[in-house]
Amino acid sequence: MIKEAKISSVVSLFPLPQYVVVLEDIEKTRLVPIWIGVNEGNAIALEMQGEKFPRPLTHDLMVNILKELGAEIEKIVISDLKENSYYALIMLKVGGKTFEIDARPSDSLALAVRVQCPIYIDEKVLSKCPQIEGPITEDEIERFKEDLKKMSPEEFFKSLEESPAVDEPQTGEGSDEENSEDEPDEEDEDDGEEGK
Image (cartoon, rainbow, N blue to C red; front, side):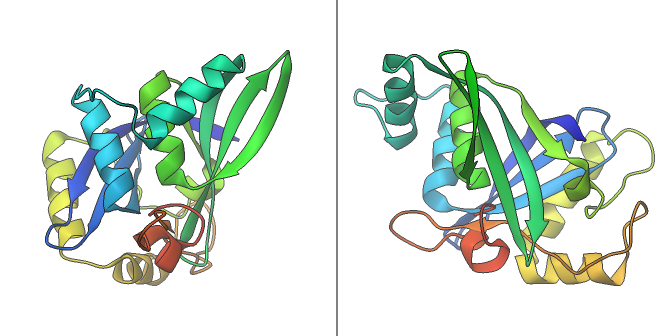
């Protein structure tokens, strides 16, 4: 089962060449931090800020190609979290058929903010992330962001191992760090498929 989510914040870890994208489920009970590379972080942050460029950037180009081919991104799903890596699926509709495309969360989110499609998180991912009692407040989000700046993906996932999830036993699976084309993203190094 999947739950709808939104991007709560995009946090720069400067001077490290990394960002953390913080997702929260619509019910405001869980925060999901995904470590990503600086290129993908910039792509997400700049689009969310409404920055426009005279020539298409990589994710803009992908959106343009999909439109020209008559394809539509229906939604993206943060589908799994294993061995400290997040995984994602892009649900693509073409000619009445739906295709599941394996992707890094960072690229998936960069596309989602451009086409304004829904973002979902699989419950098996949510169950491994910190549960918040009651709706998440702005203060809690700010504290969480500050804490993330002080810890590596490995430290975050180790803290999850030490505090088993409420819904299911903690398996020690980890963070999403993905590779950017030019330099390794957090997600590929620490979380595998996407996150970075």
